[in-house]
Image 1 (tube, rainbow, N blue to C red):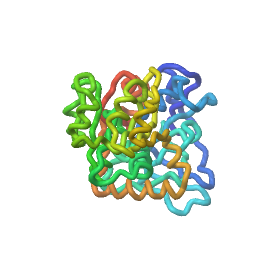
Image 2 (image 1 turned 60 degrees about the horizontal axis):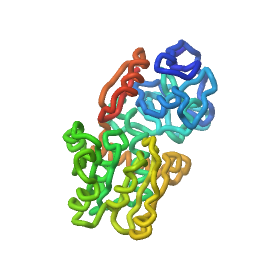
Image 3 (image 1 turned 90 degrees about the vertical axis):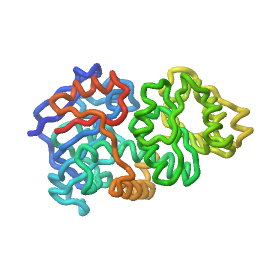
Length: 329
C-alpha cells in the first residue's frame, strides 16, 4: 500500500484526496519511483479545475514531475536499477503517470539519473521548466552569444529557466514584468535587465537596451494586447515563440510589423520536444550539463509536505511567487 493523491471530481483544492492504495508493478517499459519530492505546476491546477486540455477519468491521479529512488524496473528496462536516484521528465499524460504520491510508475525513456549535486527537491523542480525553455530558445530559436531575448511572465519557473539558459550561451535576457514589486527579485534570479511595463514604454526601453537593434528572440506565454509592442521591439529577422495564452483579451496580428521586419511567429508546445526521441536526447544532454556545472539551478519558492497537498495547491493558485512550489514526500 502507498499513499496516493487522487481526485474523484473536478473542483477546488479540497477535491485532492490522499488515499491508501495498492500500486501495481511497473509495465515492461516503465520504472517505479519511490517519490521523495514533487514539483507542482499550474497545469495540475487547471486539470483539477477542468480547465486543461486533458479530461479526467475518475478517480484520477495527477502530477507531472517527481524525483526519488528507483524501487522496481520493467522487464525491458536496462538503463536503471533499484536504488538509482532519478527524476522524471514530464510525460504527455498528466493522469496515467501521475506523480502525486509515494509511488509512481513512469515511462523509462523519460527518467533521468540525478546529478550528485542536486537535492531531490531541486531535481523535482527542474525538468518541466528547463525542457520547455530549451526547446524554444536553444532548439528552435538557436539563441546564441550576443543575442537579446525578451522574456514575459518572467517570474514563472520557465521564465527563470530562460534567464539561466540565456546566460549559459552568452545571450542577454530582458525580463518584462507588470509592476515594480518583483524587479529586484528578477535581477537577483538572473535577468540582465527588467522592464516594468506599467511604468515604462516597452519598445523605447528595449531599443535603448539593444542600441536600436531590437531583440532577436521573444519568449511569450501571454499574448493579448502586449503582442504588438513585443513585435515592435524585435530585431529584423527575429523570432517570437508563443507558448501560452494567459491573457483573456484578443491577440492582434501586427501585420505590417511582421512584414516590415521579416519576423517569424511560431506557436510552441513542450510536447514537440518530448515526443521526438532525437530532440529529447539533445535536451537531456544540454540540461544535465547545465545542472552538473551549476549553470542551471532551479529556484524553489516554498515547500509543503504530501499531507498538505491541498494547502500547496491553494498557495499555488493564490500567489505569483518567483520560483517553484515543491512537495516533499
